[in-house]
Image 1: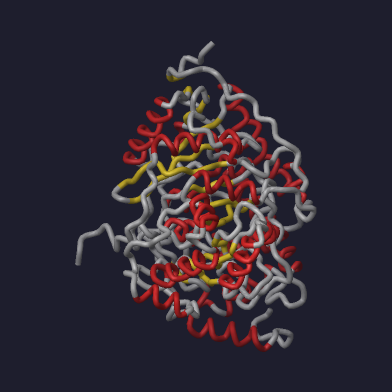
Image 2: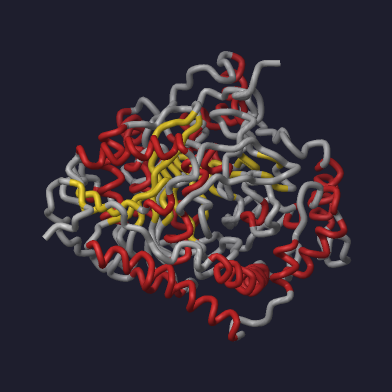
Length: 577
């Protein structure tokens, strides 16, 4: 029998999916190497001058330089909006090579990111990218393809370890010179799948956990990332560079990380697809952390298909990350099997009306989204509100304060004796000693609160974590989905990008990321249209390990709506001077 609040549509449910089991410092301290001292001193000396739009040199090859001379900084680009599948077809036919693709993206970064509109999304390029691509071309000629990403350039967030000539800094000057002794599991799996790690993206420093007054997309090392749609608008964060970079066609695909909103918000603000997986689907080993309860890396791509290809390539159990053990039997090496054009037919989707109402224009866009879902055969349950909304805000922050200290100290210990700092306390002291460079715009009150917290055996922490899971999972997402027999929930991801304001900090309009984030459940953002030329996204989220269902729904919506538009690098929406 239908719920009285259902909108007419076919009532059949999705067939149950059956997963296959798959195994698969001290700045001046005497111990600091002289080279790192020099690097840090140089960056600190120039940080104030380069704070907003630093120019990082590529060391471009003659071919890249020639490309720059013959191409307008915002003109047509051969690889605009190209997909992973199209790139693979091009390499198979001989139209492209991994080397030529990589060279084109490096030229694009120099033209668009460092000059022209100067998006400033890439904090560092990989000096070995072209040689890696050349080696992958040799392997292709020998009929050896490593995986689905063979030859595909990817940008990754600068909190993800790579054991190469690039640094991993989380955007902080204190971490300048830090070169991890081994790859993160994400980087390792990217290499195994054949990807070319093109470079690292700027982010909200320390993934936006240093202060409540921070500005998304700003870091002491990288400066301010811009929104490529309107340059004085914010790209959201903390995966700011990954969202802006892939949207501006600086790479084929990108990777960000999320604790609460840091993938889906920049995806929404930059008009791309962002997929936050279930915590444990992708390993967090070798990623600078905030909270092991909520942290996860995930794809930022221009299409659902590309995000799905990337998702499958990086799944698997990692003995160094216990959360991944839960994914055994629940993950797939290939999620493209769930890309079904009529995947909305019969899907029961609950409308989380409690997340609406913060912006009239966004509400109007969401109304159009719902009409598309209905027209494609979805059964809409309206409303399907999560009654625990807002009740875990304080406990979520409490968990962060405990886990940040414990997890960050553990990460620094992993770096070994050559780590630039060894504890959160040393980071706090560095920031105090370099206030002009690191705390010119906002402070570190959250770091200070975290430093005061005790161990993870503290009852206060255990109670907060239990409250989070009870409210977000048992009484939250699971309860409403059980009540209405839902396949997924739908809500606005957020509002249009706000003006970047380094004085007052961020001013979010509203959003829906916390439900899935606190629960540790999956969430996918898809472009839903524009407000005054600024992208706005829609989120589909649901139960743990429900990526197959969400991909099916998101892909069907994307194919029916096709609302992704590439950015035009408009300077401002305000009156012309």
